[in-house]
Each structure stands twice: as C-alpha cells, then as structure tokens.
Image (cartoon, rainbow, N blue to C red; front, side, top):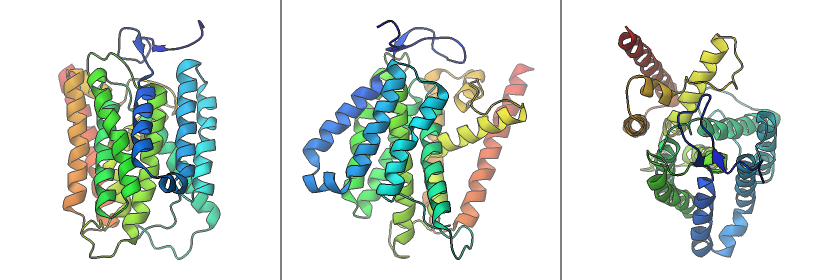
Length: 323
C-alpha cells in the first residue's frame, strides 16, 4: 500500500507546494462514460468499439502510472497498444498531404508511421501542459467544445456527442482544479484527454478535407485549423523540446521552461496565467475561423510566425523584468 501514489507530491520542477490527490481523471472518465451509456445506441457503441477500447486502455495506462508509477519509457511504450488499435483496426490515419504539399502518392507504411506518431505526440503534448491549476482542464474544454460544435455542424453526431460528454465532466472538474486546487487530473486524465484530442484532430482533418467546397463549415486549411485548435500543447511541447536540445539535454528532461512557467515568471498568478493562455488558444481558433477560406500554405506559416513572436515577447519581457 505504501508504494501506491494516490497523490502528487511537491518538489523538483512542480509548482504546487502540498500533497494533492491526483486521480481527478477517474471522475472525468466515469462521468463521460455514464453520459455515453445513456445517450449512445448499441449500434453507435459497436461502430465505435475500437475507439472506446483504445481510450479505455489509455485510461488504465494513466491510472497505472498514477497509482504505481511507471518509468517514462514504460509509459511511452505502453501507449502504442491503444494507438495501434486506432490506426490498424479503426483506420484512424492521415491519408494524404491535404494540399499542404503536392504529393501524388504516399506509401501505406508512411501513412501508418505518421498517424502513429501524430497520436502519440499529441497525447503526450497535452499531458505536458498539465502543470498549472486549471490549465489542462481549460484547454481541454476549449478544444473539445470546438470539435463538438464542428462535428455537429457536419452531421457527425456520434463524434460531437463524444466530444461534448468529455467536455462536460472537465467543466465540473475545473471547479475543484482551479487554484487553489483540491485535486489534480493526473496522468489518468491527461493521457486520456490527450488521446481523445489526437483522435479528434485526425477525424477533423479527414472529414473537413472531404467536405464540399461550398459547405458552410468547411475550412480550406485542414491541417492548420487542427493545429490552431490544439495550439497550446503543440506550441508548448515544440518550444521546450527545442530549448532542451539547444542546451544538449534530453528532450524528455523535466524542467521549468514550459509556457505556463514563463507567465508565472512574469508575475502572473496561477489563475491569470491560465486565463491568458486559454485566451491565446481562443485567439488562434478565431484566427482560423476568420481565415477559413485560405489555404494551409498561408495559415501554417502565419501560425508559426505568431508563435515565434509570442516566444520572443515572453523572453524580452522576462529579461526586462530581471533587469
């Protein structure tokens, strides 16, 4: 019993200063599962059986890590099982370049590799932003609400319902996870929601790309719009990996270089930092909507440029504050 880790302890790179329960993801999963049981038909469950099996596996991987800690390699390698189920049995794959570049043909093995990496990287990217009270929950609500509304607008009611039924428990969870936090999401929730978002990203890209050109919900830039929706975990993860590699450190080494650490260094409170980062996420989504008639070749460089500007402003502001 002593080796069970039912709470998150302070220290090292962590911000919190007290022992806090870390199984909030269990409540989110149970709440969403109950809602889906009473709202989805048996046919819906059977049609999406590989997705539900996969997300249940990811839930138990996170739960195992929260209760009896896994090593980073064990946690990473175990994620390939639910990912493989989605890619090879449910055919959740990125099937083309979606107009970003002109490729006449992509070998099947490259499609599988890119799809597996996309699911694994996005899952863990979301897990990495779970370092500030209310941050992962807020970003999860924003992203899942967007996907829920968009899938509803294109007639994909099952995907819309799944998105909204996970966003709902996150709202309730946020009341207890807001500073000062009474409970954390833990890897149970972070891996599960990150995996759900990565699944929704791929489904969004494929469905949006196949929409008629005159459909009111059509985004011309499928890839860039998906990136804009999940911009905070994507931007934050790429940023810290680049910083660590520049210092000749392992990209998996924990530190205090995450986006939320930068806002705290500027004197923001936990709550204000979360609200500011959530506002950035909303601005990127609004930008994608306003530029929905433009292609990936315009919007993706624009997103990268804005992220570089944000990083530059944060560095300069911190340097000025230090001086």
